[in-house]
Image (tube, rainbow, N blue to C red; front, side, top):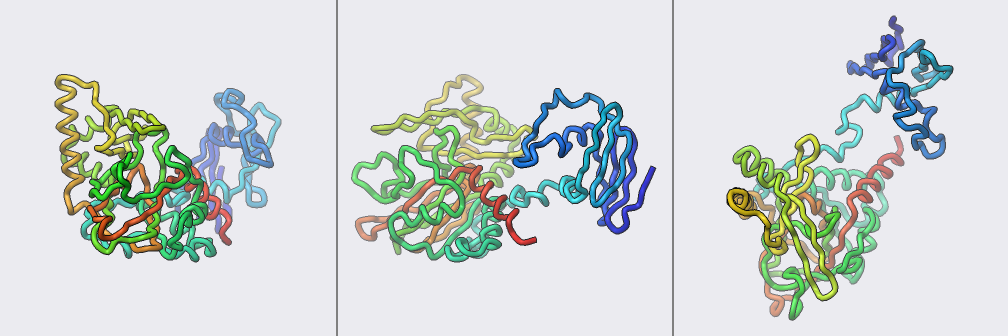
Length: 380
């Protein structure tokens, strides 16, 4: 049977499901099992959490009557004395692509970093905009998630101002370095970041589980000579490796790599592939830190093929054409995806020009949650 829904949609149904033609031309099929598993009546009306388990749902539910009433799809079930209402607006939302429902998941690769002007390509807002303009913060956070890199200007160049700015974005994760850490030269550094040395492209803390989601670096004192910031899109470079050397890519994605950090008061160890894939084969994380990789337990052919792939990836990371190079000034804050965007710096001389940054880590889920709540609360 079929029924017209005016300008909204048209639908047909049978015992196995409902097919809706939306007014913009999209067509969606909602299987009876999917509808039965997502009945609003089986959720707590206050918090929306599910009240039943899949084992409580009939294995082969069948639709008995389907109709439209006051903006809702109303369903009666064979063999059950219940009626469930599905808001058409909610069904419409469920039918849209994931990237439309959550645009932050639409990753934008930027392989040829040397051709990019960082200040115009990536999201950049003032701290005042981030703090007081909800729409601006949603746009900035969305682009941070899409690009893996974004900037905030006008953050006061004073101690701990970073924590105020970071709290607008998510939750700061405390580590053995504290809530924040100072990036400046010290006499006997426990980490080479606290020296004048240039640092090759890397991601931070692959020896942690979980690995920090986002990193924020705030410039208190900028050096006028040296200390330029380097960034590269690990996802784009990994995809380039997959396209040009699939065997090497596969080896890096399948080999757990040990990472180790030791200091006077901490010993951190974790194993993770340099390229981590999702269940569908998509790249979901890149972990690369030559300073903290520990001795591998591989031998023979496995060792040889891993090191061939490892070297190939390392050489790609050294290619200048893949690197964004920019100089941050006092009061600038950069935030980047620590499981995607590799970062580094050129060398500098602290004896000639002091250089002082403060950094912190933000949990991934808190940043994405903050974005979702802000977007949900924007005026429609």
